[in-house]
Length: 223
Image 1: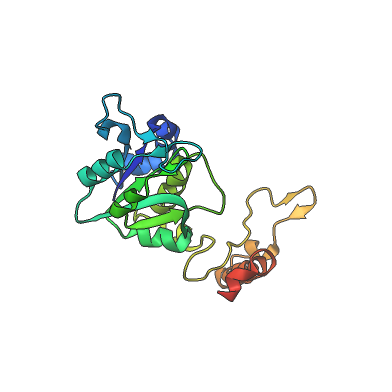
Image 2: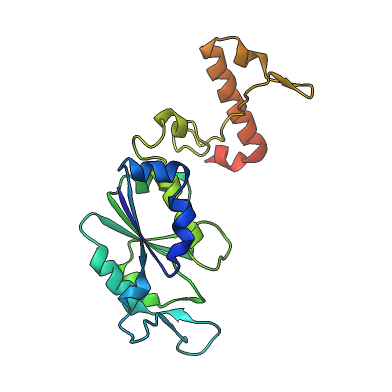
């Protein structure tokens, strides 16, 4: 998979790309992630990418030309162009599995007060990571990239993400897990996890997932 992220602040991604699972996936050539400063595509002599909104209003608006040209330069027949915006479709694990099936993602990070609406003419999908507003799309782009990359074959063990919370096949929260020591401050690991009977352990974990989902996210069970 190839992921191109269009941003005005490339340095924000330095730590994100150089640590943990993302770093290992890149080193093993399981994913290619490129951070593109769309200011480089500006035709303005001073590489300007924003201007005041027509009709008046607060803040500055991202101009259509730099982003449009960047997308047209990067996209191919396999590309899915994603715009991160508060009024986009709410992102979830089901969407992550859908994105994982694409060969090439182009993610546009908005910034400032907003963006010229004509940018939508080159967009295939609009996504939001929640009902709140951030200063830009950089953090949401990291959220989406991280959630998709970990689903790519070979990045982590398949069973790990199959048992994740919000898996589309179960729509349950993950079961509680434990490790050493067996007892800490009077709190003990459940006996069933120590008996070596994998059938009983699987049944226990499923029941705990259902119980946890009922308590914390009953709306998931309704779905």
